[in-house]
Image (cartoon, rainbow, N blue to C red; front, side, top):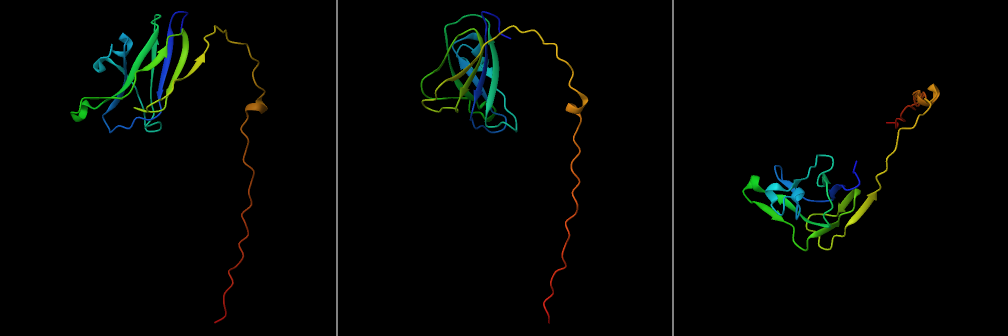
Length: 157
């Protein structure tokens, strides 16, 4: 949970196609993004169920103004170095709280920032009465009678 002067950011990149062993990084003008050094950038993750989408989480502990960054594909495993996306830097205004940064895809020109601000509020757990047993009991499936099968018609010889 973000405190008053921190910014929790979840980065979601909709599409970045890679080959096994390659990775995707968030690299930018803040030490949390490697200060434009891809060796120190924020590594994103994916899995079989979400590929080619990638995501990463980060907490920026202090006000920094606008964060500028790019997505970078790490192709060092193939001896190709780093592949920077083309175009202008992406920009994320620093605002304390929890944010989700959704970007369409790697190198998509004109990709717009779609930020979802989730206000951080202090809440305490509510006391709840337990659910009645009937509300949580599993429901048995209805019995299904086997369908009658009619004998196949046989053509006279």
